[in-house]
Image (cartoon, rainbow, N blue to C red):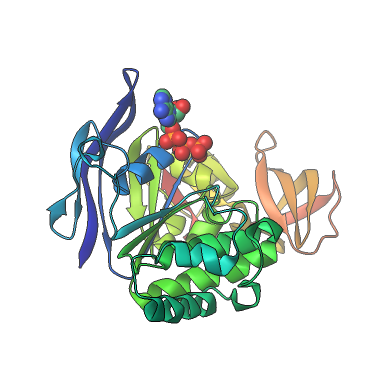
Length: 332
Ligand SMILES: Nc1ncnc2c1ncn2[C@@H]1O[C@H](COP(=O)(O)OP(=O)(O)OP(=O)(O)O)[C@@H](O)[C@H]1O
């Protein structure tokens, strides 16, 4: 069931279009991740969804009711929709417990205690409850901010860059925690992230924003296997593009449809002793794998990205590689 929906939302700043014709819906318990380049309009959109900024065109609906223009409200925003800002907006000189309690002041104290205990447990911050906010790490503050956002049991939780500035291990824990919150509470979660890998890991559905327009929506799996648009592929990872002619030179047995370019993720181009001969042009150490630039002997002008898991490759080495044909995707 749709809980929040945007219908042809548009926004201009100083005569410049920042959002145009943005339409989608979010369902109960669903996690939607919005990805897009810097300046593509992500924060503007999340503020409109929170009811904090009026769109110039279009509408946002919450459970069958249109959001009011925030300029006409005494206190903009909605109890049912909570936005957790990138800078957390926590109360300093207060403990974690006091910060959460601040959200629950209109409830009786028994309920406050009960709810605070639940949230401390859910966000795994019980051990931090009496600590002053100023003493917390970035990841700990992030969890407190999410606990505060959840305090009044909103139907929709909007998270602006919840994983930025987190180390890889804290991020992995938080990704799991956000998933757990969505499934255990049926809260719809809409989050913005720069990192498409995080988005693919956490989201049920991805929304791709480019220059203010939604250019793709779908499950992470579908979008990864068929990004379709170069602008989408650019956000998701390192890939190669091949013309039909180049593809036919490399793989004479296949007959791709004319007029297309084809994309291939770097991870789908493997070093393979039974494959085509190539020379490595560049090797970049990447931890678990090396990023390698290859030029095939049959197309020496071509430069292809591949991942090397053997980590034994050096520049200007003769290697062989193969292409996972079923992983080729058409791009425009
Ligand atoms: N209040 C404002 N007045 C004028 N222009 C604005 C205002 N807020 C945002 N913009 C412009 O609108 C565009 C979209 O901004 P927005 O912050 O929504 O992008 P974003 O995708 O969130 O970017 P980032 O990923 O860098 O945070 C940018 O060009 C920005 O400069």
